[in-house]
Image 1 (cartoon, rainbow, N blue to C red):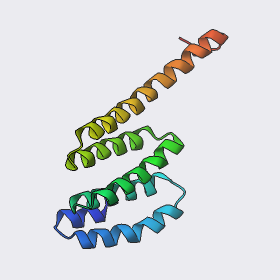
Image 2: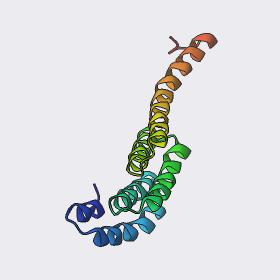
Image 3: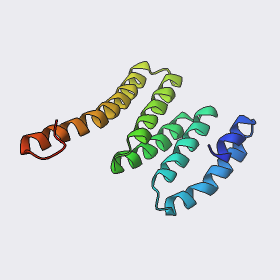
Image 4: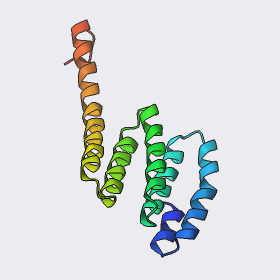
Length: 130
């Protein structure tokens, strides 16, 4: 949980933005890429809460690109969930549903991937195949 979101919950969105904009360059330099995605995700939530929906979408799509590029299932699924929430706030239920389907696709791919690997190992006669 970030201090930026804490400020938002206390009714101080400008302090929330300040904290997150201060954290973003630090997160960009950190070797753990999820930190940048988390910061962008939090920034998106503040934009959404203040009614700046296009900025919320932009930040959330940028956040989504990070876990998708490194295979981060949980981060990608969360981004799709928050995209759905933003689209619902915008009164676009079809786009919200499409974002939610993206979340399920990510989850199912994470389950199918290991199963496919086990089947391939079995076909090759390797240990660990099903």
